[in-house]
Image (cartoon, rainbow, N blue to C red; front, side, top):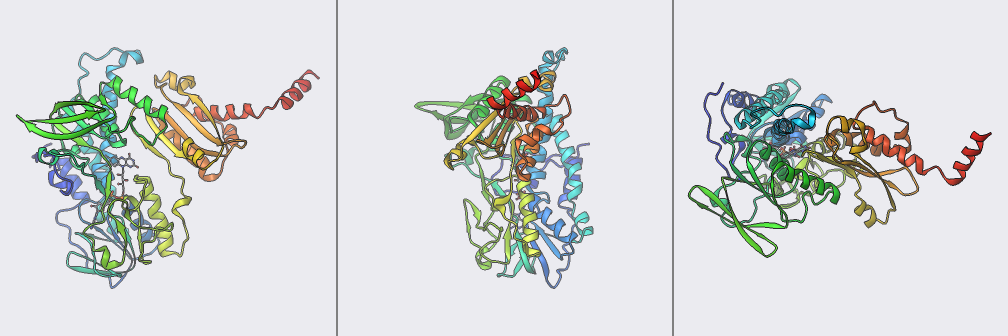
Length: 517
Ligand SMILES: Cc1cc2nc3c(=O)[nH]c(=O)nc-3n(C[C@H](O)[C@H](O)[C@H](O)COP(=O)(O)OP(=O)(O)OC[C@H]3O[C@@H](n4cnc5c(N)ncnc54)[C@H](O)[C@@H]3O)c2cc1C
């Protein structure tokens, strides 16, 4: 039941998410789990094996792993435990994406042999309530009480280095043998005249909305912009998306980006590619955005503007200079392949230092740090096989090399493609848009990379990541029995297609002669 709500005002990036958090039952549960109001910071140990700054996915994984292995660990968080992922990223976005998908399916019920419900209009506030409930539920795992029980000393406060071997928080000095900087990243502020004055939403404020914006301008066509543009459109907003580049998800293969463009158009998103927002102003309670597309200038009027224009690492305010840790405000803390900073006792992990800013890379890099910092490990960042996925409908997932990257490295590539409309389960599920593309080193079955565009691409890419990271070739994947009917069978179909190419004319004729005999 709602107690009261604080209005979710559009905010500036340096404001903290919980200041505008809706304080209903789930808001209180979330806060009680990830920043208990009455929390008392512990008395510091004489020295810690590992002091961690930032309790997002990277900090949490490192803290738990190190404490489980018997290390004396301190974890410092200035805002909400769980970081972006739990509070203002993966978890709330995936929760509203799920509801928005349900509405899209209800409206498309005829495609599934059902009647379209008489009222398939979305109830935004119920969708957001569900998101808050789910987030509060998941947050139970990250509570400082639970972390303390696991042997982690949890401190709330702003961490600042007080020299090369100590961090200050809440007036206390925590001495360390090793430290980990896991302070994450924040939304990059677009340099658009008038935007700050007019007010705008970022991922730090958009999940606090209580009312659906009737007209929403999304600036940026990367993963965040595309996922939320589609979700808000399906939840009933009129969404306009402006992307400076000629395609969405510019790093992905062109046909994948085209499928996404078509899907967004079908949903009713108003798409402006090659388009820049050059100014914003307010008029009569509305935000007016001036856009320029090639030579064409036009203005649109919206209720809210959501920016998704990249992420800036959190390196400021930690007194990194005192610790001898070098950083770049655009790319983050400088690390070597072992994730060691320019101070050999201090490491970094997650969004604050990585190019690939994902929860699973934050997790993987934190595991490397625990081994390298505490157990003389020599684990390398470059040895990781990193997949990623944009959770639009259809999803777009990738692992390994793109064809253009292979070409740049002069690696010859042969690609095997299976269209999802040839995969039985995709057809029965009415989810037959997309493809599985597997790139091999020509003349071998070694998988260099793969792109999957499919309803469940994020699930399907994991099998291909396993193959790449374990050195399993496409030939071996053909021998793996896949359950029928599943969409992941597309991978086996690609492997069968590869096997057919191994049948040389000589082998074919030998086989024919054998059978004739
Ligand atoms: C809308 C959105 C959706 C996303 N969806 C996905 C997804 O589906 N899948 C995926 O893999 N990734 C997703 N991501 C990315 C994912 O959230 C991040 O990659 C991940 O949270 C990074 O973890 P981290 O621990 O490095 O940093 P963060 O999660 O940013 O945590 C860093 C923590 O450090 C704290 N901190 C910073 N400075 C200090 C200081 N001086 N003192 C104390 N504490 C400090 C911060 O308050 C924060 O809690 C999404 C991101 C967004 C914005």
